[in-house]
Structure formats: C-alpha cells, structure tokens
Image (cartoon, rainbow, N blue to C red):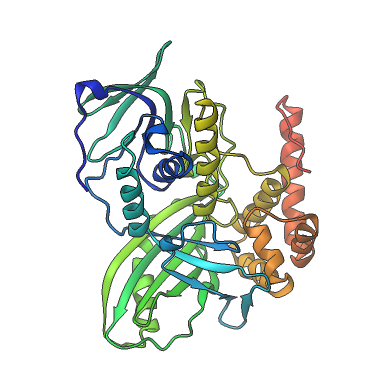
Amino acid sequence: MHTPLLSENSSSYDLVIIGGGCAGLALAMAICKRVTKPSHAPKTLIIEPRAQYIDDRSWCFWERENKVNKNLVAKSWPTWEFGTKLEQHKHSSKSGWQYNYVPSIRFYDQAEQLISKHEQITLLKNTRVTGVTPNPSNVEVTLDSGSISAEQVVDTRVPDSFDMNKATLKQIFYGIEIELTTKNAIEDIARVMEDMRADSDGFLFNYILPIDEKSILVEVTRFSGAPLAPETLREAALELANHISDQSKYKITREESGVIPMGVAPQVEAADPRWLRTGIGVGAARPSTGYAFQRIQGWADMCAKTILASGQCQSFPSDSAKLAWMDNIFLCTIRDDPTLAPELFLSLARNVKPDRLLRFLTDCPNRTDVLAVIVSLPKWPLVRTVLVDLFRGLSTRKRGGKWRKAL
C-alpha cells in the first residue's frame, strides 16, 4: 500500500500511535470499527518504521466465541495436545473452544485495507520516532523527517527503561514453516506443548501446527532465566522439521523467532497521562503463558471506546492480584528448577478439565476453576516457592519497603 507523505497542514493530530505492529494496528482497527462514519474518527497518525509488511510471525489463541474477524483466522483446531515422550493428553472443549492461528500478513493486510477507508486515519511507514516531548499544550513527536504534535500519544515500543533480564523467565522461540511436496501424514491437531523436557539452559518443548495438507509450522520454545538468543534454537527447529516431514522433501517458506518476557515488574504510572505506553513491554503477554494477541485485542477495543467517548486513552489493564500471584509462583518454581516444568504442565493437562483450564489460561476463571488448578498441581515445589516468596516479602518489609498482600 502507498504510504502518504506528511504535508505542512498535517502536523497536528488528535492521536499519534507509535508503532504499527499488533497493538498499534489493533487500536486503529478498533477505532475504525467503532465509529459510525469514517469522518467521525479522531485525526490519527500511525508511525511504523518498516517500509512494508511481510509474513514475519503468527499469533495463536484459544477462543470460544468468534470475537476476532473470521477472515483473520487461517486455521482452527478443536483438539490440542500436551505431552512428553512418555505421556500425552489430548484436549477438546465441550463448549466450543478452539485453538486459532492468525498469520501476521493477514492481520497487516486487513488493517491496511480498513485504515484506507478512513480518511482521518493515516498509516505512515518507513518512518522512525526519535523523541517524544510533552509540552503544556500538546505532545511533540520528533520523527526522522520532522516533527508533529498530538493531543494523545499511544507508544507501543518497548520502553528504554525495560530490562529483559528482570523478567522472571524469557520465552524464547524459533519457528520454521515448511511446505512438503506430498500430503503430510501427521494428525490434524494443535500440538501446543509436545516433548516437554529440561536441559541445562531451562525448560523446552516442541510446538507443531499442521496448517494445511502440505504446510506445517514447527517451533522449538524454551523458558529460560537467561535472555538467550532465539538463533540458539534454529538447529533444533530444523531437526524437528526433518523429523516431522519424515525425511520427505520440503521447502522452508518462512521463519519466525523472538523473546517474550514472562513475569515483568508492574508498570509504573505514566509521568504524563497524554503519553501512554502499551504492548509487550508493559505486560501485554500473560506471564505464565506468553500469549498476548487476545489480550491486546481486548485492550484495543476498550481503549478505542474511551478515546471516542472522552478523547482519553486507556492504559493496559493489570492482571488481578490473585492471578498475578499464582503466575509468579508458577514461573519462579520453573525458574528455580526447570526439571519440574514438564510435570507441572502435565498435571494441569491430566487433572483439570479442558474448559476449566482454558478459562484459567485465558484470564476468565471462576473460583472453581482456580481451585481446580491449585488442587491439580504437585504441592511441595509450589509451597517451597511460596515460602521463599513470603520470606523475601518479610525481609523487604523489615528493611522498610512495602510488602504487598498476595491474596
């Protein structure tokens, strides 16, 4: 799509979104969908450093009701699997939950198409933001090609102050999508955590999605306390591709990789309410899973609603204190002893009904769901982590710091 150049009369905006990735485009699309007429949208500029979008990643999520545009979802699976080499558990829902796969290029293309129909919203690609300065009357955004002003700024970049080392765990992944020359022979289920195991660098597992008769996405994922480079997993991903293809000929159609922080410090209140931070750097991903797509879509819709109602942006909501505490205990247990991770996840798959587990994993558990998760897990490793957490809290309190109540 053609990227327009900014003219002199396009230097002032109601809203500037820094970053045209998942969060930035989701907010723009939510505004487009909520306005009754294109002309009713706030004057908005989305600034994206990429010159063009490519199919560089994929987003997956469980969903019961189809709240996401059906055209975004390339494939859905009613059955998914957790397992080690010795034990596997297939899950399916009694109430319509499915595991959905969204290729990023579909998301980007649909976002651009929708934005192009709204004259008040502009996507400016191949442009970088070099500075943001709140002033008494507006917020100045400096670009590599000049400067603009905004009433509100939503910044989806990872903050400069963010330290990946401080995340409890890092979810590191490397994925390869392959296209076979013949029809694949694997079962059409989403293997979300296969061959769970641990080594000297942490906990890892395989992730396998048969996208169609010939295309398969294979990934190797690691949970590690150290911020390892995704490229350290590429050789394992290639070996997995060879194994899944059963040594048949295939071609690599794309590769994806990344590091997702699991368990980041609570976000600090914005120094200026007109400059809002959002995205992975401020907790968009669920700490215990790393899943973020649906959480971002929910925030975007909520933020668009408040922008249109009051002109004010809405920050990313914090997790409930109970879920945040449970996630922290779970992550700390894995960080301190990665060999426990396969049994922890197997216990959930083995002992918790699929619908209960999905409600817990997708941020909407009831009390019975939470209790079922707690009862299912091996007690001593988690109790030990709780005791350590409480001891640290008491020690901090004695030194005069604040101690939070977990439950």
